[in-house]
Image 1 (cartoon, rainbow, N blue to C red):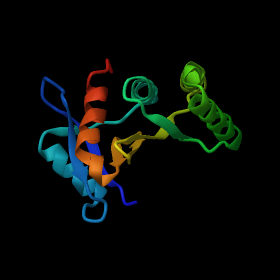
Image 2: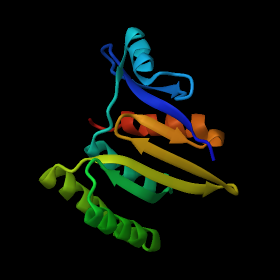
Image 3: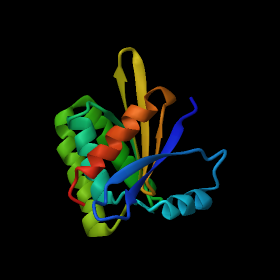
Image 4: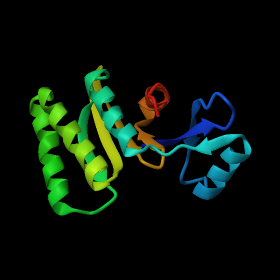
Length: 162
């Protein structure tokens, strides 16, 4: 399935509101795209690990998404295996989400290991909603749910205290 992409930006004015812009990597040069948004008064928004962790929590507990994958900036096979096992545990027993979130906090705070990308999904009305969120603010979503889920992600982040 070909996913559509968007990018989260922050307004440079006093209200600092987050906005959602469509990004087509087949048509848009990434750096030109960023420069165009900058000239329109928007600043690139980076999704920190702290925000990613809170986003996982909210997507799972409030929006009924399932965590499929978490990637880190550093390649560490042992860490990837541990996190994959924790994700599988959460899928079997959602009360174990706390263990996963604590592990992610520990990795981020104590070891400075940053989250590069999260992949979540859920089933709604016999269709799947697939979402990938990257640290650089690019969000990939299945085309059917692109607008609604892109706005949801932007709103969830915008309502956080960052």
